[in-house]
Image 1 (cartoon, rainbow, N blue to C red):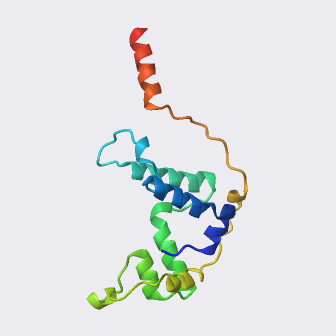
Image 2: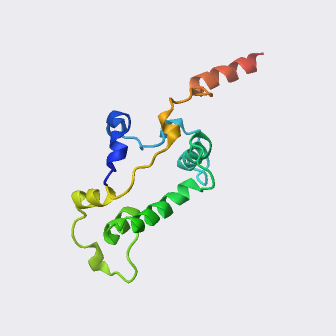
Image 3: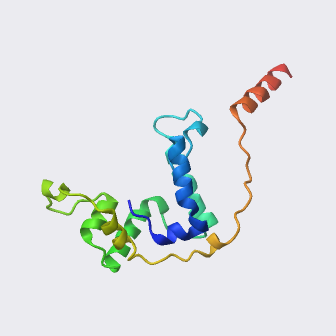
Length: 157
């Protein structure tokens, strides 16, 4: 999958370092399964992560009037039309097939160089909030051992 050069330039290329570290750990990119709290199947951890991303966009980045997690694909497709991205590449990236296409649409390779050239048609996003230093974490999560110790202390008291 192509990654826009603007993403790669952020924080000295830290994103690819992060991706590699997560790959070595065998973990998903944007959440840690070990932090799950045994939630219900109907409310998996990745959904909670998506909610936090939405909050970060609205509150942290101060981007208003969007449904961020659903809106990404719409925004991607709108910009793709505006910059005249090849429709086949745009469809492959978004997971959409052109109307009326048949099995022949799936033939052949999706060349990374071709997709990369198309993704570079995208403009860079200037988000002033990203230039500020990160705010300190407000909430420190307790480990399972700390929770168990606290429960044991309550039982004794």
